[in-house]
Length: 273
Image (cartoon, rainbow, N blue to C red; front, side):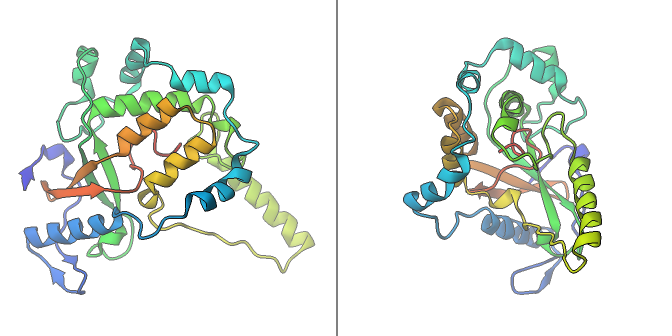
């Protein structure tokens, strides 16, 4: 177990419930419970759809939502120095660094010094429910800032074209959009229903661990169906291939967890993907 800088010590774990339903209170026991839970959560899916079935499903959804030729050129263009400068300048100096402890301040002093390091740290933030259950925590990824610069550049490029391929109901994480638009739209619909169809109802569907269950193979297939250039798809593939994480447990890092699926909460590119 490796110690980490004190600014990252957020959640204190006093006890955790293991898979047998027993409470463990030792540091190593708590760490093992969390490693087992996230190893299972990020494990490869047990089944995957056949390629033909996936194409039959995605074809009609993406047929009229293809990236333009201009978008393809922009997304496939070589990374430019001014894009790195912009990503560094726009970054928050208060962001917690990743495992290499390199903060944005260092790159602001020397923006030409950076390397691609894919290790990351998971910080668990309690959401609701018993604190002894691992499922009641949200895993936030602390990425090395050099990787975060790259994903910031890709996200900035994608932001310019995402509105042309996604559904107009999608308002979250899109520039010049506001989630309150959908709240107002839902309120208007409910007022209309009360007058014209009072027996109707509204259903709220919430996908448990939605970020963490995204299948990487499926994600890359979706990008190809929308017409993303292969170089962009390859960069996403590299960013999500063979990634490993350690969990921050009471100021120390756990054993490594292999990330076979999921997009990273805390990564600028993840919400768009």
